[in-house]
Length: 151
Image (cartoon, rainbow, N blue to C red; front, top):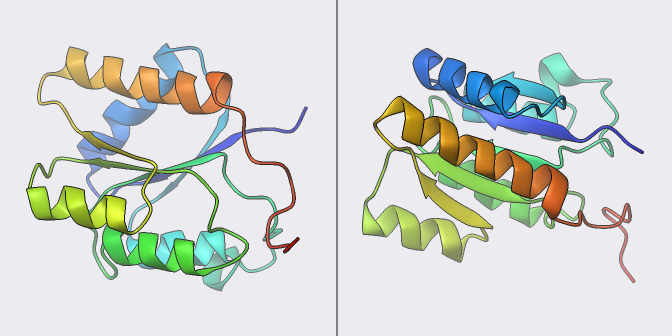
């Protein structure tokens, strides 16, 4: 069975630490790749820059994407993910503190699979992240490995 990778796109060190702790606490032994801005997320996904040489077909099982990111914001990252044949079907969960209706609408219009607002309380945040991890890595059936190929 292939290793299921989680790509966490998070610029806030505290939220990164809490997310990593919650995923590990829920006994998900998956590899978690952390990038801290939108440009690095795109470099990772498309095997450019510091991530050149990475197998571009070895995509994450799910991307946990913050919206308010340096360099390139989360909505633009999502737009570029959906515009590329190799990544357009990859699950993307917006995990953000924004509860602005315009962000929720834009996220879904751009093809987000889910929009989760980060809870303020640690226990609630931990539970939400653990549920996300279990769903996308265990319950959900991932797309077949035909990425980037048209039928």
